Length: 146
Image 1 (cartoon, rainbow, N blue to C red):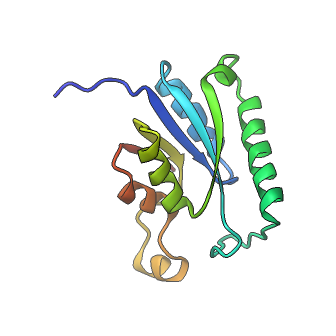
Image 2: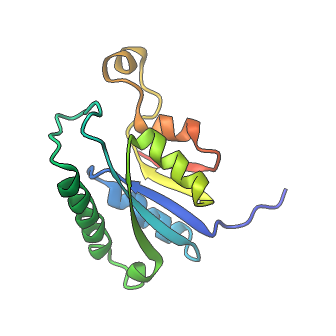
């Protein structure tokens, strides 16, 4: 089986720490690919973890775009801005990321996530992890950095 390097990479960002590592990894590992940094805006009625407080939709969308722009600006790669396109999507990350990857014919997803296979207690208490959900629902390869 012959595999080729991906042409398009999707890096979702939820405004969590260490997501810059996923973007750097994507840019370094796939130097010829176009990268989309997808800022996911969680709906107001979504269950929140980590004690997050949500603002109005327009404020959250503007803040997500700003965080994504700052993430690209902080990279120590002069050509990063030329290779990274920022897009915004509203919805639950575990649904939005796989749907975006399918709709935009993305070849590979790279994301930062915590342990993707948590213990039974953690799953029951916190619910299923976003990274696990994305891996299970995305028909393309997904790399999860921990």
